[in-house]
Length: 337
Image 1 (cartoon, rainbow, N blue to C red):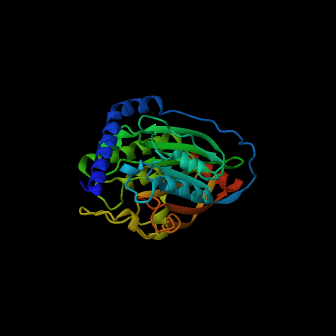
Image 2 (cartoon, rainbow, N blue to C red):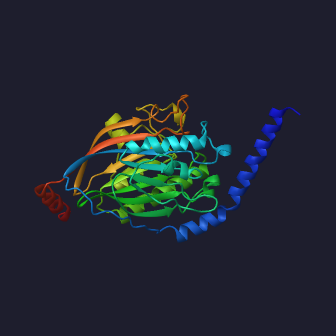
Image 3 (cartoon, helix red, strand yellow):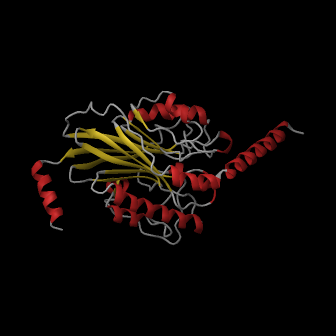
């Protein structure tokens, strides 16, 4: 038999066995992660070395790093080497959210990454939530919340969202959410994703009430798709979309019954990505958007291959602490509502 045919058959068997192993743990993951992991918390040290800054600049990034094993990964570039390169390249950003950080977590963290603060990996069988946040600023604590609803193979990992509180300066904090919603656009998957977004909105409005926000991650959703509910999320939480704010003047695309998403690696800065960044001011600080970019060239290897099957998305913004007079007027206006 031709060696190529033998290799292809072996590859198919390895893939089939891998998928079977993943499915075998689905029920365990769905139940145990929602109960025991939903309120996990970790306190980080060294939060006393903070500046007295009244304003600053942030470069943030969200990136689905395609961290499934090479044999079942949708990414074309070598996974281990790509993850090391990703870990190195994201070091230039102040705050980074990664999704699908599964099989190559050690390569991502220990292959040259220089962030001083990084969330601990969620461990489960076969995989945790794949969500991690890396920061140059102190992370005060982390909480991870599993979705109550999932569909298909998405139920094999403990997908959901996480929130970290990051201290930018003395008395200046921001809640940073990392999101990975249910994928695919069939009826059942879209229904689960809408419920994901509702769950996220309710949690933000309860846990992060009054907090400045950065919400970044793989939402697997589009404004133009009539089966998604992103407008409900922005309305419920009062967040602004970085892409809409910078490239579309804050105007959402029209909803279409025949919406067809663009291929993920074909995106440009003016195209809507499923990998999204939202922000929200509070009565303490004001964010001002500066730039939004699809980081294709930066996150490609020497041969021009993308390091993942998603494009990394960056957002630069400045923050400024509100003056005492403005703060007083903001609180007065809120108290009279």
